Image 1 (cartoon, rainbow, N blue to C red):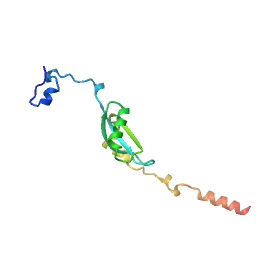
Image 2 (cartoon, rainbow, N blue to C red):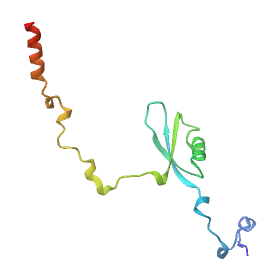
Image 3 (tube, helix red, strand yellow):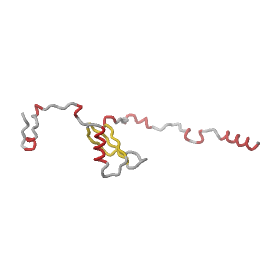
Image 4 (cartoon, rainbow, N blue to C red):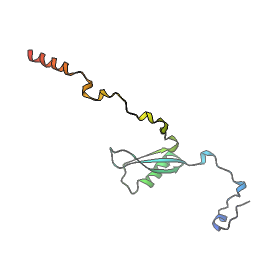
Length: 125
């Protein structure tokens, strides 16, 4: 039984009736990829959008056609959307700054006395 519609384009498509519809296997479905674009060498990659593709190789080709045709581009990254891993908003404490950062400041190092002794030894020679 075929799907009948008032729209002749739908009727010509030979679509099966709703009760005969068979969903495709998961491997037949295209995956979503996130696209990152680099404008010039040495700059960071910027997320420019998403696309659907059956494989990473074809995703790269489609990304080139979609996102690098009109803009200057030297490099593209495509990443499966399912492979993107993000932190949770509940883990906000991971971004709190460390309390002891004396290693970043010069006062954290006790080299002044050692340098003074070394200079004194050089003067006495």
